[in-house]
Every structure is written in structure tokens, then in C-alpha cells.
Amino acid sequence: MIRDLQYSKDQVSWTFKQKEVILKLNNVIFASEDIENNYISIDCGKNFETEKVYLFDFSENLLLNYDIEKGRIAWKYNSSEKEIDIQNLLLVGYFLQKNLLLIMYQGRHREVAAFDLNGDFLFEVIKPEGFEMMYFQEFPHYVSIVCDGDDSQVDKFGRGRFNFKLDVETGYLTKESLA
Image (cartoon, rainbow, N blue to C red):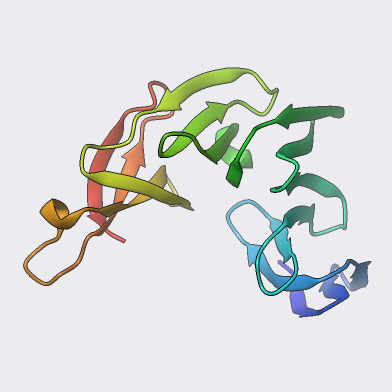
């Protein structure tokens, strides 16, 4: 566990095992700790619009980074460098404990491709009828894709955002709960 995670426009810092880590980065928007996967996520960009994302382990080793504009995703796994280029990149989900990389991109609609951490393609996720895939969320025993429903999917209280549990073997989504 880390202590004292702080960030400013050009720096992110934290303390891990009594060692202070200081990273110099440009246009830092936000930094957060992912306790489940033991890394720090840092969003960078101008005008509060994310352009690049960096994931560092607590000891300051770069695990993954992606550039939304260039569509380039790079990460390290089992001591080797991996890289994928995706047109119209929107978001990357890095799930180390589940050996899973989810890549959301803009096709005809928001689409998601899944890869293992070796970079091997696993499956394409089919969006649920009446929903648009928005972002990823990790739970202790599964990964979900949070989806916004159209007018036909809204409940009697006007809520239309739901978690869909992802089957990491098949890519099928099962509606779980409100997000």
C-alpha cells in the first residue's frame, strides 16, 4: 500500500516502503491508486481532456501507457515489451490479476476487443441490445463493462446505467446491477 499520493500539473508523488517516488510528467489531470492491481494510474492532457494514460507499479516501474490520439498502447509483461496500435482508441482496461487487456475504441459504435497480457487476441465483445458500452469496472471476482441504456432500458426511477459482467472465456456480457 502506498501513502501520500499527490499530484500537480507536472508531478506525481507517493511514498512506498518508506521511499518517496517522484515522477515528472506534463499536463497531469488526475492520479489514483488501484488497490486491486497495485498500481498508480495517471491521466495527462490539456484542458482536462485525457490524451495519455500511464500505469506505474508502486516502485515506479512503468507497466502500461497509452496515447489516445496516436492509438498506441504499450506495456511490459514477463520481461518483454508489447505494443498494439488501435484506430479511434477511447480507453484501455488493464487487469493484471486476470491476465486481461480490454481496449475500447470507436467503430460504428463503441466497441471492445480483449487481449491477454501476452498481446494475443481473445475475443470481441458484442454490446448488449439497447446499450452503449462506456467504461470498465473491476470487482474482486470479475470485470464488468458499464453500459448506458437507451430510453427502452431505463427503470421506473430513470436509471439506465448498468454493470454487465464479462465472461473472460467467451466475451459474453450478463446484466448484473445498476452502476
